[in-house]
Length: 341
Image 1 (tube, helix red, strand yellow):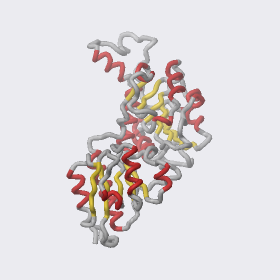
Image 2: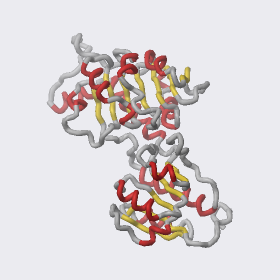
Image 3: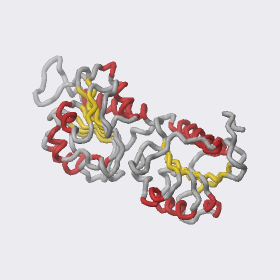
Image 4: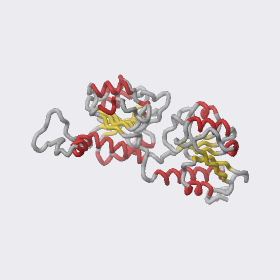
């Protein structure tokens, strides 16, 4: 019997493939789930131990290169479950994965609050002109915005978030967490999702074909939706044209949601207020990319999903799912591979 009182599946071994970078304490927690667990640790190598062929479970770390993942999938022909320790799945859902019949899961809910907090931090940084003050500090200059003695008409003053309109594109877990966080700021919240309809966290929820209405009204547009064939370049020249000239675009999701060439033009010509970008089509961002030199851009290195407690959250989530798997219970974070999330 398991701790929850369920009957385990028959007593055959359960082979779990883990990346070798996980600490011993993590591996010990996995082994403690059941005496049936057999752990196989692998690195980034196409030459895998023979035990991989009998794998039931594959922890598909982002640490693995594509060729390593391909080698595991090729050898583990009876794989029953692949776990992806992230919120986004676009890279993990390769054609080979989509064609197979094993279950795919990800960490549903684990990143909602951390990523939403990061988005809110970026909104504050843009509204309060934080980069201006950081630049002045590094230059040891008492400079920036001095509303108390004079106002440079060419320089925007820090703004309030209170009363501004927030447009959340993608009202999943992260979008909902962000909508709840801005409530004390008395921001007006609009949202966009695949299936529109009333939601207590947003004044209006728009659906496909209605993105323009959200963009035209929003002071901040936050992208919090998965990357799929339907959402790639959801923000392009036309969408940027619909945005307010003072609006900021915040991307804490995936880089390919944005047409980079169109955004660079819009930023250079100041058609929008600016952009806070945490995800990029190609990572790391190349040193010659125009984003680096644009004054109305705040860049972070795909850091929204990183937080101090992540290691413990990751371990507890996977171990919890593994207990369900061993007991024959439904897994929590099952992915709809047809939709891509």
